[in-house]
Length: 416
Image (cartoon, rainbow, N blue to C red):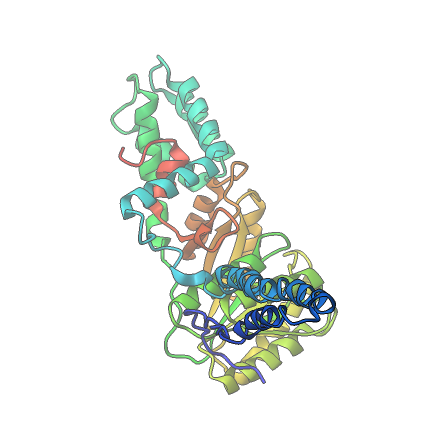
């Protein structure tokens, strides 16, 4: 029977071992009695007996005195090692987007910004070097503006954003020398204008029970890992969570979700590999309602946006979920891989049309990322961007910040 409840981690019970004292004193008196009988006439025949008694008496005190000490040491070690098995369940002790108690908030923000800047280094370096090559000791004219626009489009910022940036650069600066640093500041400001309206941290709904979150995307974008992170964050915010493993095409996805479920204390509803995904979703909805769960997260198989039959399977899952609650799913999160590039635009278009995407989370923002595509998607679809992910840990998923992202992609410092 599935139960949706938080597993609170507290102190562990310690076993107390009592020593039994006094029983070992009796054997010590026996040799004394044996020595008292030695002076009798038959002393020669009786001499070996006290010697045997002494030999027997010597080993007896040693085992009782040493064994308790040896047994206590290994039993104390598990008590010091006991927290690690409990740590996975206590993984969401601090929400991913909050500063650590022992780390100043400003210091944490700067550390996170450095990671974003490193993640966008491929895009920012290409932009910075291109801008420097164009505007070093040259006046602004039609030729330089065209070159700038080409560089911006190559960085996946999109035609609309590239045009807006070149127009902002040209305003009041035509036929004048412009420093590359000034171009980068303008670039950062225009990108921020596009991103700020869609930068919205994700919040778990409070009116529906369960609040159903459907997670979609193509293979390899990090859907399963993102679900695990969200489950951990929701648990920290005192929500009870259940997870539905509807990616029945990959056995590894089911196993991965079970591991995340153990870490966050969330039960996982799963079927056999190759089973009907919509059937698993239906069963998960039933159990979540019976258990009174606050949140149900549904993982789905990675679907190529150009495969009609696979997208039809996704539509079936949505229809099955609506049989329990016609307002569900209450949130549809599209997970995008930052290394995808222009293909992410077609993914956003098809998934938005099929599943009604309500928000975007971008993952794998590492040194190979082509982060400019997020700007093009924001300008083209206006979908909320909830968070970005840089690593595998729970703390590596943070709310999206337009200022940090725009400055990082332009290659300028946070204080600029």
